[in-house]
Length: 105
Image (cartoon, rainbow, N blue to C red):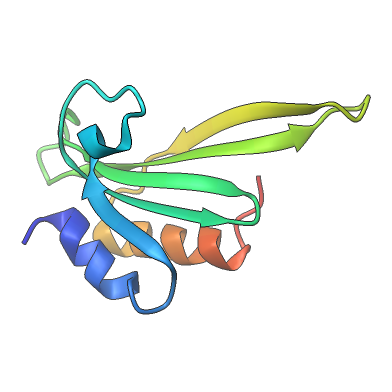
């Protein structure tokens, strides 16, 4: 079982999440690897392992979010942000925080 599958096992019963692979998403990924996807009120997230990280102590992760934001003139614009949880525990906290609305964008 890889790290993404371990994270999924820890949160799958709490939230409506999908464990799939990047090519199935058809979102422009250039490599195929496991990804956890979820959608909450503030947007959609994709969590996957960053195997290009030079950190010799293991994998870092990428927590990528697509969301919409209202501008000063009440236009809605699409936004994207991401961050890098460094451990399985941090990634689990980020999934829980995002899905529960505790992480604000």
